[in-house]
Length: 262
Image 1 (cartoon, helix red, strand yellow):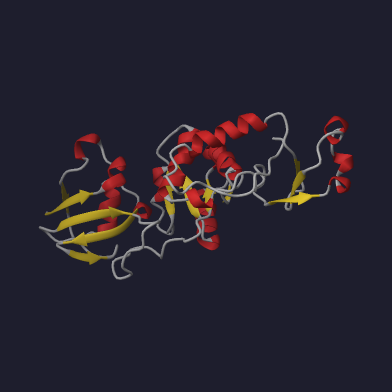
Image 2 (tube, rainbow, N blue to C red; image 1 turned 30 degrees about the horizontal axis):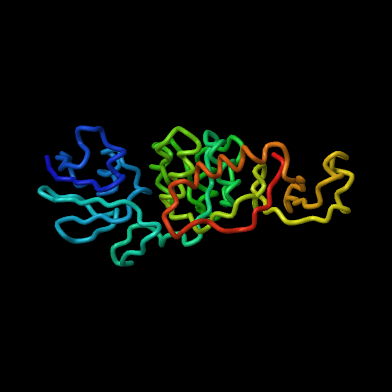
């Protein structure tokens, strides 16, 4: 039987039981397992890992463990570029887009309100989520740790919080998206982009009482849904303000404030 010493850093400790966090972990093994298999056996999905150093030398996931190895495991650096020699996964997605599983509906809605590109297929199998992630270059958002261990998945993130507003803050922090926030520029229903539309072109779709006083409207270019500053405007603004509360100083989001009746 072989034995290796593992140490996980930063948020990778979220996947470990409390007694194993931020300390050396003794891992016993038979044969010569790959470092990827060992990392996931300890509970950490490989898509959350971007750098593994064994005995002071960067290695890839296919490296086989040997008795006495000391293994340091670091999280994904989406907002910080590291040496291509050391990187385990494909290069970071410089303009992050997302695909979310079916259990994150409220998070998806908030991210779309912020102008973040996120799709959510209806009741897809795990294989389909992975296929979409790979084909479209989207980061898979999920609270399913098992899904993130799928061998073909290259970009994924385990959403820690179970509260939608905090989930949205978490995603913005994790992928450094503060500067990409553009409130009310995406359709919260289908994720399509909203664009201004002349009142005369959609007059038959506007309630008469609204048409009597409001001149500015936007329409989703994908699903055609019409939006205007309606009765829920204040609540939506409050939700967005709550999400953006922890934005770093000097990186306040910009963008045109076009709003929809949601």
